[in-house]
Length: 192
Image (spheres, rainbow, N blue to C red):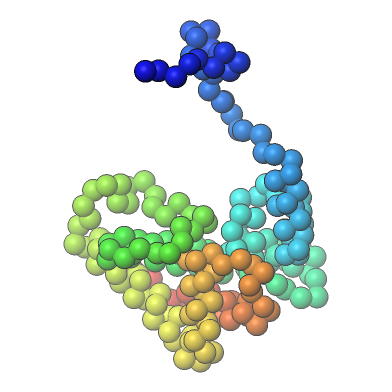
């Protein structure tokens, strides 16, 4: 038994219910909430549409841009190189998790973790698996070396921001400093 036709829904010329085309409007209240949260984080509320404003590593990059542009007294953000190292770390972790069969607690919104041709439902060759494992090992070892010199918080906060996407409000200035150390170590790790 079919449900009754919605007579108030907009229709296409052929009689089908009209589909939404283009971007759906964002409720003004949701926009205001996002702007308010960005302002609380020290980010210009007008950046609310920037994709970087949607996740912690991106917000830290926006703060870094603000510092670079205005040379404010304190840098609460990260550089472009550190941002890219964090993105690469998250991509490596997700690919490693996929081949090793473990799941991550949170789906990070900050990346498209596989580019066309990577995975895509096909079986990976042994050399591809070895390359992913080697990339993970190199990155992990770089973080472990940084942790030996600066404490294990380096590893914890780097994972928490890049992979788990913890809220920016959970980051103290000391943790951001440790994150920078971790991201710098990832940026300087051996390439695969």
